Length: 399
Ligand code: PMP
Image (cartoon, rainbow, N blue to C red):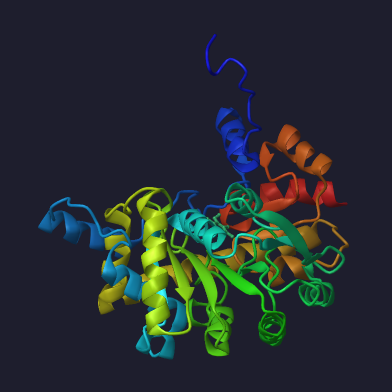
């Protein structure tokens, strides 16, 4: 018999499965609000001008295709640290932080999770309720028990902060706490500055290991303000992990550009930690691909391209805000009585609409509007042509 004869079919990925169904839908009015991708007003994934310029320059020089170092491109890793901590951070000056290039934010989480399993094998990992659906699977695959801490308050569309903090304060020392640095996925509900201070204090008090997931830096308020949580942890003197993704902020989804950063207590510690993280990478994929990291590094280190990128990022951010405002206004015009301020207050690409799985199903069957069964919609997929259509359908579902 075949060695695969008894293999069972694994469940489909809920979001990527939605994409397949969307692609198979023949209705011309269909709208994909499922996947977490930024589309421009023409409904296309943009190619940023700064990226295009950096790629053109690379094509011009035609660099040889050798292996990269295990930890990736040094200029890239350095630029990532500056984005996270600020150019003048003592963590950078003291060489206390280790950054390795990774295969997207997912790859960064995976390397981080595998390394954590060596560092602190008996820890439990706590993720927000709800969280990005891959967090649980990733940490479980690395061998951890994964639990949740309260996060979303459905009544307000905001964070159930009291419950969250109370839970964090009950966790045993050495617990790993996965925190969304900004633009929480899936709810769009973020902590305030003062709330972050309390989370940092709880992590210190309880000896927790923070793992900040930064997949949307620049999508809430801007590069600097969106790093506020990371900077608070940086200033705290604690040790922590950060996964970065540039999939969205550079519109480079398929190039798999991310990074894992570990903040240690000293330069000496950093060197030892890096040597261990490199072993994790070496036995996984050996070294990261060149192109995406080189392009991002070129943009971040050229003053002109950096300026251009920040403008393009700001335009994406502004367009998302306009879509939020436009959606909230249209829903109100169509008679939705519920307080809709959550639509405009939530940050980043997603909004948690409060729609039930059944309502989401109706949107799909009757209107060809695809959303995640939890009621999450990607606001970055709305545009001036589909906004009225989506508002019509959503209002009918919400009333
Ligand atoms: N973390 C969060 C919170 C995300 O939303 C995403 C992407 N949707 C990732 C990590 C993974 O990023 P990447 O696509 O770069 O692997």
